[in-house]
Every structure is written in C-alpha cells, then in structure tokens.
Amino acid sequence: MAAERKYQRILLKLSGEALGGQGFGIDAQTVQRIAAEVKRVHALGVEIAMVIGGGNMWRGADAAATGIDRATADYVGMLATVMNSLVMQDAMEKHGMATRVQTAIEMPPVAEPFIRRRAVRHLEKGRVVILAAGSGNPFFTTDTAAALRAVELNAQVLLKATKVDGIYDDDPVKNCYARKFDEIGYMQALNMGLKVMDSTALSLCKDNNMPIIVFNLQQEGALEAIMRGEKCGTLVSK
Ligand code: UDP
Image 1 (tube, rainbow, N blue to C red):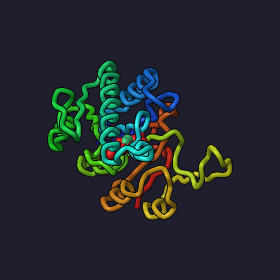
Image 2 (cartoon, rainbow, N blue to C red):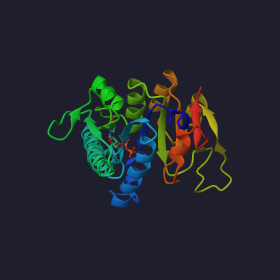
Image 3 (cartoon, rainbow, N blue to C red):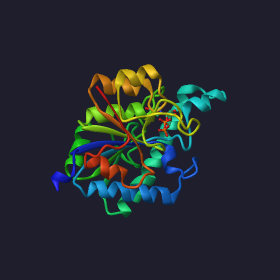
Image 4 (cartoon, rainbow, N blue to C red):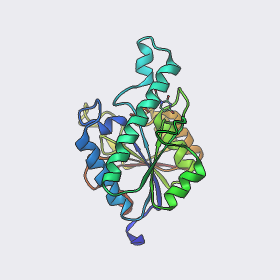
C-alpha cells in the first residue's frame, strides 16, 4: 500500500467555487463527486486535511466594494467557508469516511475549535480534518489559511485544486497560446503576479519550503495520480 503513495499527509485546498457546479451556491452532485475522489485517496492511507473557501457565496473584498465594512464583510466570508465545510463533511461521512470540522472562529455547537495538536491526532487516527473559517482573521484568504495550516500540521504538500490543470503564463481560457508550467519557483510565481494564489500564501509557503501543486480537480483521477507521484498540474517549489 505504502508504495502506492508518495505523500503521507496532505493539505487539500478547495475553492468555494469548486463546490458550486455553475459557480454560485453548492451543487450536491459536485460535492458528492469530490467526496468520492477524496475517498479514493484516503483509501491509500493518506492523512488528509482540507481547507475550503467561501467564494461560491461571499467574497469580503467584493462585498466591501458595495459599501460594507471590510472586516465585517470578511467575517461573513469566513462564515461562508463554515457552511461549505459542513456540507462537505456530510458528503464525506456518507461516503464512509470519519471526519472532523474544526473552526478558526469558535462555534462549539457546530464544530470543534481549531486545536493544532487535536487536529494532528485526528489525522493520525485516519480522520479527514476540515479546517473551516479560514485563518479566523479578516484581510486574509483561505489560500493563506491553507498555507498556514499546511505548515502547522506538517503536511508534505499543499494541493490547490482549481478549474485548470496548472499554472499558465496567461489565462488559457482566453489565450490558446498560453504556456503551462510543469514546475515553477516561488519567486517566479510571486514576480509574475500570478492569480492562482495570493502573494501572502505563496510567501508563507516559500519561507517554510512547503511545496504547492496546482491541479484540476475536475480531471478525474488527478488527485490519485499526484499521490502516486505522477507529474500532474504545476509544482511550485524552491
Ligand atoms: N476570509 C477571511 N479570512 C480568512 C479566510 C477567508 O477574511 O482567513 C474571507 C474573505 O472575505 C474571503 C472569504 O472569506 O473573500 C472567502 O474566502 P476565499 O475568498 O479565500 O474563498 P475561495 O476563493 O477559496 O472560494
């Protein structure tokens, strides 16, 4: 079994949009498909922590542009990530996985608070840990929360699921000549101002040598291929 997997512990970052078939809200079928995909990786014995965004419901910066106080808008965004996390937990438990949701903002009737050592214990026991409410701080993103948790929990890699199969030098949807990177350095990604991950998240990964793999979750089997050590998506490192 061990020979089939390259990683023992991963942090999987899903954007809120990944859950919302057509972009907004939550699409039940999409959530089920993701849960099935995660289960196949879990069955390899990989310890899985997840961070889920909230952009399918709310983005603080967009809401602030309409006149809402930015910090307030960001707290609403963090609550959106809790909704997504609970829905994902439900789907994963229905697929037979043991899971725990931990929130960066305490809400005991809903989920455990984020306690690093307890999260690690859950992972060691084979429970999938879903880390909700981002970092708990406004003016941050769930990408940054994912980078932070990946480092804190000693994950070997941060897997960033997107709708494209890696990082390109231009938008591949708009430019058919856009070139895909198989690998790219942290500094290069930062200097290019790539939209795939914000600079705070990239810097945190760079400072802590946390490799990032950007891949397409809609591509069936991509996650398993990465676990087997196959080249898939774009590796950001060094
Ligand atoms: N957010 C925040 N602090 C965090 C994480 C998220 O304030 O540590 C808020 C922020 O307003 C953000 C929203 O939650 O716009 C949803 O998160 P994000 O935009 O990262 O979701 P994604 O794009 O991954 O779906």
